[in-house]
Image (tube, rainbow, N blue to C red):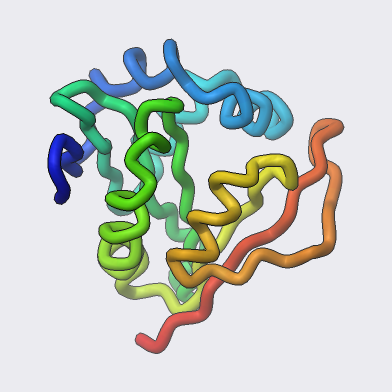
Length: 154
């Protein structure tokens, strides 16, 4: 995938190492949604149709996936939680993101979620991956979020 960054199928054993070093803004997002980081990662792992872990030098640094929210409407929620270390490899993230998103939501025409309005690195990455980030904010758990989404031809 690029230098010292690899993407592998996620394993539940990746949850603890990522949760213990999660980015502060990712922790804030999880808490605003009513979850601990470990719970959010475990739920994402269990509910995702596809789930991967980004390893940096063999160490789990991010987990991400796609959860079908409506098979009839072909809509999916995409999610990504990571450590500061994974964001130090922004060029690699930008390059492999679109391909992984296509694979993650291959049967969905709409994919999206919410991102904290103050999560600038994630917002830039989402835009680089082809998502639209809405300017309007909505409050969830006392935190301002913006919706991001993409519509795909399937």
